[in-house]
Image 1 (cartoon, rainbow, N blue to C red):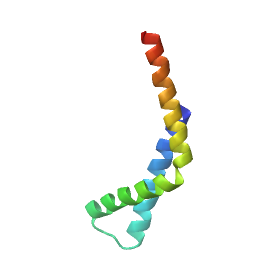
Image 2: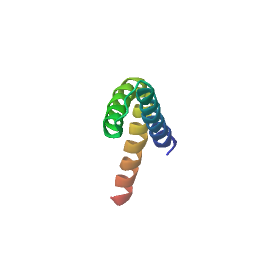
Image 3: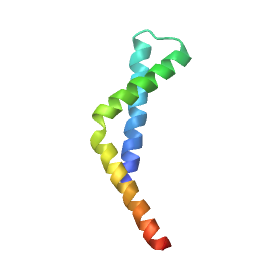
Image 4: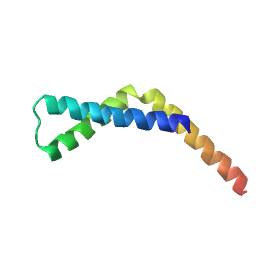
Length: 72
């Protein structure tokens, strides 16, 4: 479960950082600020968190494969 937790915490951190930077750059409308922060953090996480995303994916698919074997 650790890779899932690490990836999730890093995504939340990226959203918070993007929100803060955009606010400091002068984006004051809360709705627009939130939408742009999510978009920016999504693009940044796609580039920077690929290793963590792969680890999370491997962990989740391993769990799904184990549960399917137990069901048979």
